[in-house]
Image (cartoon, rainbow, N blue to C red):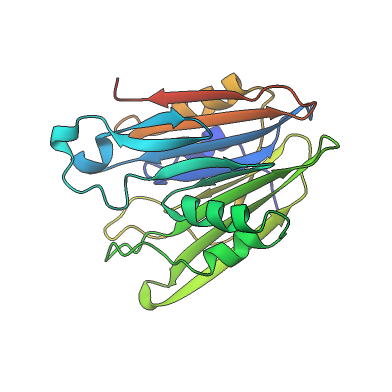
Length: 241
């Protein structure tokens, strides 16, 4: 697989929808996680990211303008012991509960997602994308990505894909809900895209935020976890202020 420039990928796509990027920073000193949301409707754009103890949620920017909170208000990120969970929907909580009940199970991520499927938002049937990072006591980590999608737009069947990665310095993987803008919006297809990773959280956030479509971007979350046991750094950028 050819490693790509994530800034270029984003700049050339007006609507990848919601996206997750996970990998090892250039220099190999930290794990990097990013999650962004976009929106075309007023309801989708009326959101911000808000941190809470052990996690991150989406929240209405103007509560009086929130027409329908289903599918757009959820916990996007949670930490469960030595594991970080990031997703584009309420499957974050499903994965969290499976891990909490069976913290030593290597396949809790997969088991949790076999209880879920794509979003019921016909005609798009938006894929559920999820990521997991598990850290070890020796200063290492591994990560997984998943996409749950309709069978070529057929809502009678759900296809589930899982990807497991060993970290490589300067390499990450990017998965997003949509291939591009459209009506209905075509779902992501193929494997997560292999991308170059920068060295720091600030650089990572700048590359992503500055290349997301200015009309459609809504919020961005970036987390850098030092592999030497240092305190994680987190960045939240909201278009609505």
